Figure (tube, rainbow, N blue to C red):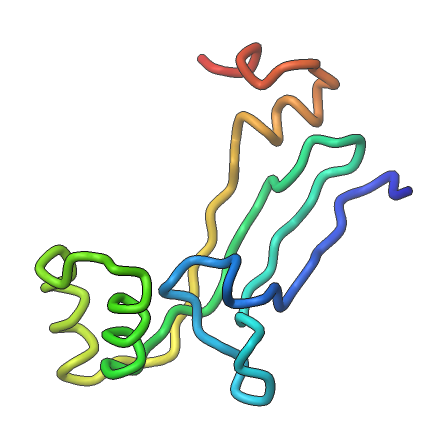
Length: 110
């Protein structure tokens, strides 16, 4: 349907990472974006705003049944005040596969 990458934003929070901040106007959606490559190559870039509220982050970790002790530094950063911030990641192998028209991602691994 598309011949170039497409940005899809505000996925449902249920299918995104626990640390992605919910949209204040529609909390069932996450403040995130994925860049999808055409021709079936899938997600090549994913990003989103991180939860900066201590109580909300703790709630999400408990909802996902994750061990609290694994997030000590993250809690400290939120406990003493945090600022709104975001991050992203690029799937280099997927980008290379898409740009080169390769059939399998394993052909892109160095």
